[in-house]
Image 1: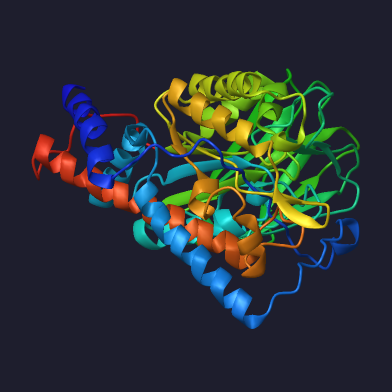
Image 2: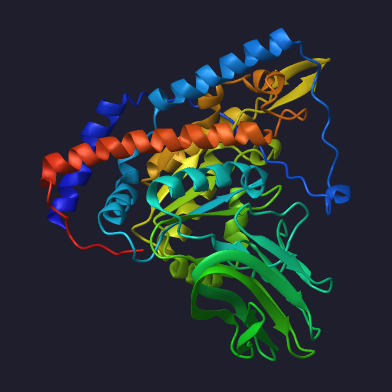
Length: 454
């Protein structure tokens, strides 16, 4: 481990200097993503129309936003050395492709749930490092507007979602914080995606029923869920290519499911685990044994924590209490995956109407302070998204540019893709610095010490 320690030490010195990582203003706030689906549109709230903007105003706002996002690369990531384990795994994946994919778990709120932002990151990383498949995908369609751009999911009508924003209940919701439950025979959930390694996550429980798994109309196996309460896993190697997967319950007994995993050889996955309206402390209310086992099973190279929008609207949070809570979330992840890099993303800007004027939402300030403090205190990297957007009050320009919605909270699809592109370029810039430092420390042909692979 001595060589890897040298890389860490060198990175601590070189990354901030080479990337010009300056202290980021503490204030920053994050917004939620909106999804569109004809099937669920009637169940979603109406987003107000943005204020009218002239072509000149829109052009000026667009130029300003794009300039700020380009400058975000210069702002950099604070505590960039916390990303070194992830960069090392990226480097090894490029040198020796073809094993298990690297996996990124992206926890968050509606900004994450829409898959616009996460989907852009997935596309950019997979273009450079290889397509590892969709990875973990929630079972069925667990909430209105659920979508993944790299997979298609359906479910029959008698499944009941459990979890999501619930702060009461048994917490046995699994990795994504939502399970589907039924006690009827012949209920189905499906997944259409590409890959060759299949896993399925479910809850084992006393008196649990059975289900079959089918691939392209061929029954693979029957899985019994009866047993001591805890996470259950099924795994099967498939032919490479496209798959139409079907889970079908066998009998009138309780079955509770968490999600699919479909992966390819090598490459990288980017797995969004967003819940509309979520706050980071929600993870602390989920059953810790089930959550820990499923994180262990995913063995992530990187975990992204992208919260803060909803916390800013909750009056009982202080900077101190939220930093402490977020620190507990980090400890929960580290207990399951000790060597994983963790990137905390500060909340984006948001605004409200006050006396017919659009003004920044002040409570974002304390959330950003807490997110930064929690990141630095717990050995995580931190990216100030609000600063990258242009700072406090920048949401107005994003709305004028057509890059944010009329609620002054959520971005539009182009806005989320712009944020994804900016973060990708920032990470790649620092990854380039890491490669330079690595060559200086280890030499061009040194593979470094053996570490846990993904």
